Image (spheres, one colour):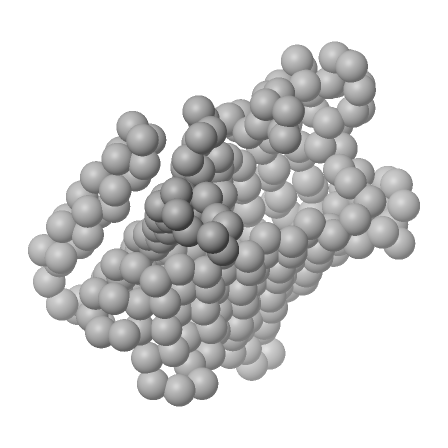
Length: 283
């Protein structure tokens, strides 16, 4: 319960700080926009309940923050994503993670002579904040293990802040894992006995955000990567969809879906879906 309490306190701290922000000056070269949400769910059953069920409580915190630069023929888009969730089932001593992500996407571009096209440089970082356990309670991951980095030059097509595609034909990818996870075998694509894996390949990143109806926004983030050095035909896929349905200024329903395919980690699709109704604040 201590972790869940800290999660709630942290969320309300973020909301209170951002509630004090004044209206943005559209003439500034930096523009910022973000959304913080806390999704809570709880189920309780007494001993006479015949339908079955186990009492539980869960909480998920999400922060999605954009800070973008534009001046003359130069653009620099940055997105920071932080997500953490916990669930406590009655009768289980330990709490279980339902989400754990920290991600930074940075994309710099200088306008070319062709409309909507830029020369670009991108950087992507993904990791987690807390320890991960398997179904038997064994530690399989923790903070900065694994950690993923992608970077490289390329070409950016950007229509506006809601639609862009970046193509990087020579992109590096670095995976870091603590060596104690590879003592007995490979882990997250890193070979036994190593703690790093480097790849060189092609990266395609796409971003699309749309509001089909009032108070509903759908954000799509896609990253494809092909490693030239090994099995180039096996393309890594990482797709995220964030759906926010605003009830009012402070309440919303949120759906987050993430699909990952990386045959070096596991030869199968990894799929995660989180739905919740909770406190929401846009800034």
